Length: 436
Image 1 (cartoon, rainbow, N blue to C red):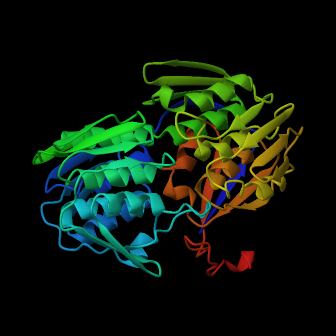
Image 2: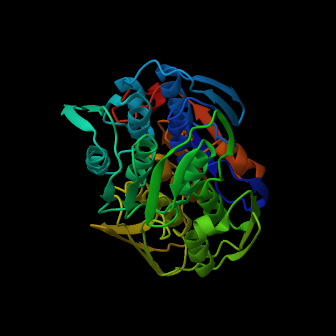
């Protein structure tokens, strides 16, 4: 367990290169085993979720080497089609290996995945799509067994633009006979990155970034080099941190189009924002105003992952801000903790109404999930005194050296490492004596 210490009051200045995308890296790592090939993947962030994906690849028989932010994967031999429960429990995105295993081995044996507990997040869209492609699926408790003698193309209409389902279908379809068309596909930049990686290995895919993706099998190649794009949620987090604390920072290595909705609301809140090429510059005097009403939506709408973080940035903004959450029913888990800092937030169903306060005060908080934990760190930057965030490893799942990056910009943040906290399912484990 980690305890994040944040001493508020410092403005942020300087430049920062944004890390590679977690949500792009994980499906690419799963995709690396679809064909027997060698992959050199650059700009991979050093995160717990990435470590979990590497452990799964190694268990399945891949040879994986790492040098800082570069991975070398040789998937020439796959020795297993089953992922043990303990590895599946490490992250929600482990379900993406289902489509990859079906494509490569014709079968997959795994259990329901772990990750942040944000709501039901059912995988029925994944299963029904794979069934339409010829997979036989059975479930026993938390275990799922998929088998397909031969996958075939299919016309698949997703009733919701699920990122995970879109990715799983793309992976499985690489080994299917005929043409697979996904209508109502997710349009996120991470889907585009997956298409780019798969096509570099010989897959025939078009349409990523639109609501219709077409896959027509593959002519596999032996090797590829691929660079993971920057993480748009980490870029959003750093921008929100500057907006809340005040100052001027430059984010490099980014694509502003990927988090344009976040930048829009920060601009509406009073920040000056300039973006050109792969640079975004954010300036703030720390005195924000309400940007009005914010509704989360699938890409290109406002991202649900940025909702807790923008909320934290606006705790002291003048006026009232209304949030409406349309993706996850448990995405307001950070609210009760932010109230302990003095925030005025009221939740009713899918809506949260935030009234800006003049001052926040440091307090001891508990991170409920990845983005909620990051939101508490951002809030602590603007609170009087010291804020402590007790974190069971959530933040490290999505942010590489987050404390170092903030400190390099002038924040006063440090991490205290303590025994054990809670596991990925939220079950309490041993705590340090001081916290019992």
